[in-house]
Length: 87
Image (cartoon, rainbow, N blue to C red; front, side, top):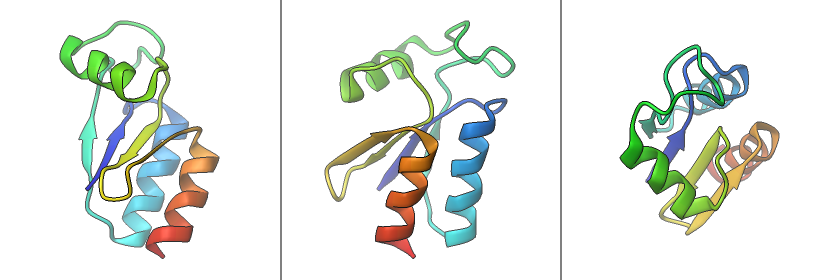
């Protein structure tokens, strides 16, 4: 399963969402921050804490691939990973 921690207003998150859509891959989306507040207000403490526990950083986008036990930050790295494993 793919899980994407992101913010709707983040252009880097949008790039990852577009790649997932282009590939036709199903994924779960988590929004730890309020739209329009990238790097700002946490809107879901549980999701925010889970993201930090999984990856160690408070940064988005953050992709978790539970099937491959892989997690990645940085939209470019995430897109490269998706193309390599899901294209």
